Each structure stands twice: as C-alpha cells, then as structure tokens.
Length: 131
Image (cartoon, rainbow, N blue to C red; front, side, top):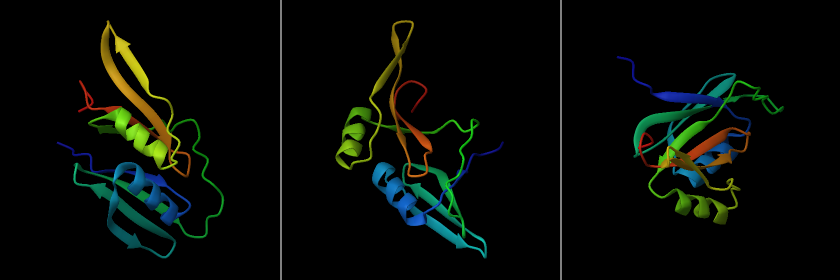
C-alpha cells in the first residue's frame, strides 16, 4: 500500500515561510537540501510523520499564481477555538470559526488561515473523521 509522506508547495521566502509554519503549527525544519537552482525544506512535528515540503526556486522574485486548482492543506487540533485565539494573538489573521452541521450533528468545526504566499490551511477540531 502507498503511504502519504509529504505535500509540496512553492514559496518565495524561506525564512518567512519557516517562521509562519513554526508559529502557526509548531512545525520545524526536519531537513534542508540545497541544489544549484532550488532548495527543499522539509517541515514536520511530533504529531505525525507527514511532512510539508517547501520548495524555494532561487532567483524567483514574483509571487506564484496559485491558480484555480489549489484547494487547501488541512491540519487537526485538539481545541480549535484556543488555536484560533493563539493565532490571533500572534497577528496571523485567521478567519472566523465555522461550524458545519449535517443531519443535526456536528460534522466539522474549523477556520482557515493563509500562509505568506497565499496558501490556505484549514484548521479543524479533532472530531469524527478529522482525528
């Protein structure tokens, strides 16, 4: 069986992105691999073996066009309201908390936040299928 190991996004500024993902989600650099024209930075934390790979293409100065195909990354947390307030205090500008119900029962409790390059991340309460 295949095992999901990472997702990759292209970013303009390594330091800015590493700082954001550290503050917002407690991710730290697990590995950094430098090549002539690009650098790969792998971020992770103790919660999961899944990693976020940041690709920095050297010499690029224009922001990436995220297009209409990208949706979002998703992370789950124990207490979504507490995490949202923590991010507000850090000045990270999360969206409002959303409660999504189906058949009278909670399906999802979440908010979105955008990283410095505009990638959206959904932050979900650990509940139901979002453990």
